[in-house]
Length: 107
Image (cartoon, one colour):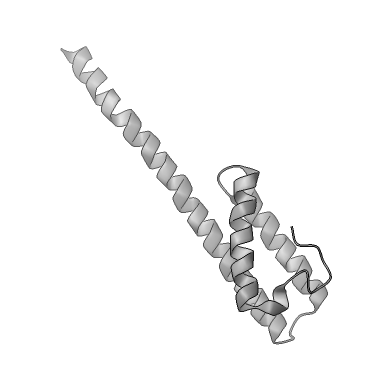
């Protein structure tokens, strides 16, 4: 009876633990996306106010992208797609941050 009860508890607990782990990954990615979004908003606003140069803007956006990709939970392709969505939203709000307009290829 003990073995049956332990098996039953394990059968219930394992899927719950897997779902909880998956939710933590999604939550972590939402936090990572929010950090990238906030960072890019700040740096683009700073650039718009002419407090930093194009060169500093480009290097800072590059660092934000690298940090996003390194911390994102999932494949590099998923991280790239996520970052692209954030970036496209940012350049709608801050056209001065469009790297194509700054002479760089968008990636």
